Image (tube, rainbow, N blue to C red):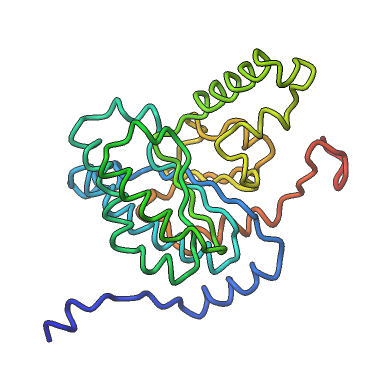
Length: 264
């Protein structure tokens, strides 16, 4: 009896979800999906729970969305886990958030390896606590040879800082005489960003009803499609993900041209 209670439960998609997945996969899939995971605190508040309870529940959602993203054939899933501005939060909350990568990866790393998922991170790595860095490093090493979905955590990440660092690197190259001012173009700036090796996001999803970018991938999202939902991140599930992908598939992506309906 005890063994049954402790046995890990694996959610089995219902027939409707399975059918929707098949239909979605028959159409163009966004290669890179970026998600601003918002609403953990409000989810907890609605249930009279501490904010950290919402963050813990949100961690479980990361697993669910990683699984369906992998099943859909998405190449990169970037999750905004902790911003450079989040250091302003209460210390207790920050300490808990810094422990979550270790808990998530220690719990689900075998599953990520089995599913051929590759773990990566963008952000200021050096400022993270040692235990957080260790957990991320171990996951990256364990999944380095995987060539399926890239699960990219934006951890201690801020887009403005990223762009500033890119400009500094280019300025250094000019000072060294390696390049000239005339060599500066979009490609050069992009090649000095943390995401230089990744395709730019095709789709940005933000949960919890907020409609802003919050210093997230400002350069990379120039031509991404945006999908905003009132659903709080802990409640974001396979149905919500499919809703966003289906909405994306209805968009006419012209990248500034006048094809399709003729509007710029």
